[in-house]
Amino acid sequence: MLTINALCWLCQQPVWFSHQGICRCCLKDLLNGRETCCPRCGLPAGSRRQCCGRCQLKPPPWQSITYVCAYQPPLSLLIKKCKHRGDTGLARVLARLLLLRWQEDRRLLLVRKPDLILNVPLHTSRHWRRGYNQTDLLARPLARWLDIDYRREGLVRLRAAAPQQMLHARARRRNLRGAFDCVTDVAGKTVALVDDVVTTGSTADEIARLLLARRAKAVHIWCICRTL
Ligand SMILES: [Zn+2]
Ligand SMILES: [Zn+2]
Image (cartoon, rainbow, N blue to C red; front, side, top):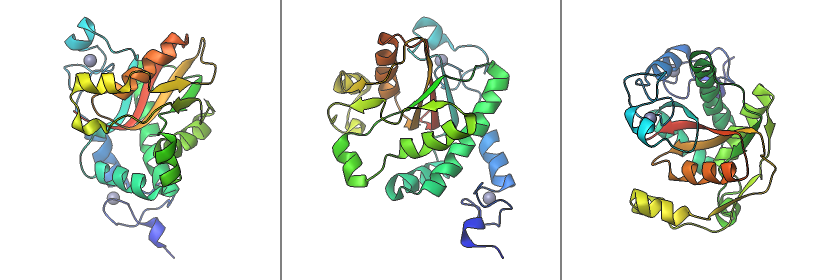
């Protein structure tokens, strides 16, 4: 008998494998839905293999970004649900989408498997109120499936930043300066930084700079959605 868990999170049709959570048709739509984007910044570009003009002039501190698709329904709704409910089953479904996308990027861009996974931390007070951090719920299954070392508390947030939504790009960067610390050894390692949504990229930027200052070899951004 099919249980409620065996329905697709998007179209409510039964799925064969309940742990996958999204049916084949919806999966195909989601994975085909990404426009051609720059491998480095993830913004729309003419080629998936070559950096866009913006990145050639001023590359971000990270080496590549992998995301499932643009931040829009239906995936944006699932991310919100995951954020507010801390649903580990749903987080696993989202993480699986990211895994499939990463495998595709790996074949296309020949990126290597990272040595270490870190997740974007919430400030402790917010973590405490929610009781979980959605980036941790996403990073955990990815680390397990790919057999990559994962340090859940490798990154810490030192102070709460003012809500980012209200700020312009430059103010966002200023707002985040010195907001994080890294308490695990990243020297010589390639790090995948897991976030749920990358918007302006200022958080990824700040953390990537911190990791490179601690002598990480390279930083790759893994997120479910990118705001385009
Ligand atoms: Zn479906
Ligand atoms: Zn670019």
